[in-house]
View 1 (cartoon, rainbow, N blue to C red):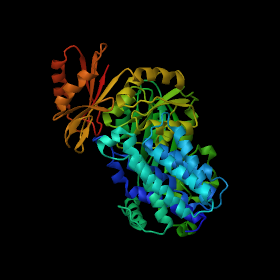
View 2 (view 1 turned 30 degrees about the horizontal axis):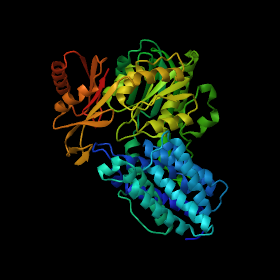
View 3 (view 1 turned 90 degrees about the vertical axis):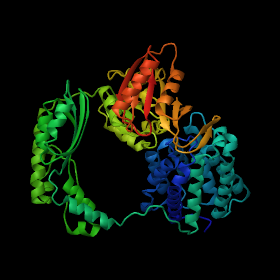
View 4 (view 1 turned 135 degrees about the vertical axis):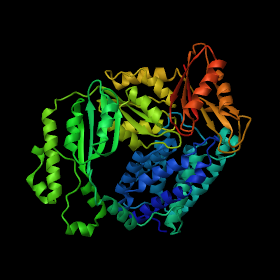
Length: 584
C-alpha cells in the first residue's frame, strides 16, 4: 500500500468497508441490548453504507467521490446508527475537499471532521456508543500524524483500528445497560467493521458476502418473458382533490380498468397508482370525484426496453427513453416520429386524453399543511388515512425507512408545508435529516410510538402552518401513555429480571416493565402501571398474529378487571407486537 490513496484505492476502501459491514450485519444485529425482535443496527448501517457507495465506481476524482459518498449516505440513512454514520461520512467528505490524493494527514483531518459533525447531529450525545469509538479513532489518528506526518496510510489505519477495538471493548464500562446485557455497543461494532473491511480491501484481501447476486442475464430473460404481452402498459399516477369522495366505490370501479392498483386516501384527497391500457378512461372517471393534480403517465414498454437493451443494442435500435406524458400541445412531432408506430399512436392517444383533462382543470391552491406518517400494518394505515394523513411511509420496528423514503413522501405530499410523524424512536433522526433536504417547509413531531402519532393526529389542522401544527400535535402526543406487548427472542437478564426466549414482555414507554408467560397475563399487569388520575380510555391495537376474536376476548377480560374505563379495540395489523396500547 502506498503512502497516498488514489481514486481507485479510495473507492476500494469504501466498497470493501460496505462489503464487510454487510457480511457482519447479523452479528451486529445480535448485539441488541433488549431481548425483543427489533435488533436491526447492522441492517440499518449496512443499507446506509450500500447507499453511500452505489455511485462510487463511476467517479474519477476523490473530492467528487467523497461528495457522492456523503450524499448517498445522507439519503440512505436508516435508524439512529445509520444517521450518525451518514454524518461521519458527510464530515469526512468535507475534510477531503481539494484532495486529489489522500495522505495519512488528510485521512486524519477528514476523520476528525466527521466526528465533529456526528456529535453535532445528536441532541444529547451518549458516551459508550458509536460516537465514542469514532472519536477515539479520530484522536488516535491525530496523535499519530502529529508525530509523523509522512507515515504510511496502512500504519495509520492499523493504529485507528487498534484504538477502535479498545474503545469498543470499553463500551460496557460506559453504559451499564450494555454490561448488564453482556454485549458491546452494536453501532460502534458496525463502525469497526467498516474500517476493518476498508483496510482489508486496500491490502487486496478477498472476503465473500453471505449472499451472492445472480447474473443479470438470467434476470432479464425472466423479465422479457413476462413482459412480451404487456397489455396494461401505462403506469398512471395522480391525486384527486375533492369533497365527500367515496374511496371504496372509486377503488371498486378501477379494479376493472387495470392492474397493480394502489389507491389510498380519504374523503378529500385520494392518491391513485394503476397500470392500465387506457389512461384517458381512468382520468375521465377520476374527474367525477374532483380535480386532478401531480399527473404522471409512463409507458412501461419503453421502460422495459431501457432495462433490457445493452449499450450496444441501444446504438442499433432507436428507442426513446421512458418519459412522463405531457399535454398534447407540448408534445413534438419529432418525438412521435422517433417512436415505433404502435407505441407512438398509443402515446399520442394518451396525450390527447390528458390534454382534454387539462382543459377541464381549474387551478386549485394546495392545502397549507399536510402530514407524512410512518406506519406498519393495514389497520394502522387505515386509521392514519381516515384521520387525514396524506402520505404513508411503510416502516417501523425492525424495518426503518431511509431518509430518502421519508423525503420522497414529503415531496409527494400535496401541501405547501408538511408535518412528519416518525412514530418510532429509531426513525426520528432519519425524519429530521429528510426535513433538512426537502424542498418545502417541514417540521418533525418526534413521536416515538404509533400511539403517540395517532394522538397527535387528533390535533392536526390543514389550514394552519406546519410549525403551529407541530406544537399542538406534540402536546397531544406526550399526553398518551404508550405500551407494547411483544415476545423475547433470547434468554437474558434485564433490570434484575430473568427473561427466557418466548416469554411475553410488556413494555411501558419502550422499557421492559412486565415479564409473563401469556399475553393476557402481561396485559393485566402492564395496564395498571399506565393509569393515572385522568385515565378514562384504553385502546388496544391488535397485531397481525392476533385474531379479532382473541382481541375481543382480551377486551372483555379487561372490561371485567377495569370496569371504570372505556375499552376500544381496533385492528393495527402490525408485526412484532401482539398489541399496541394507548391509555388516555
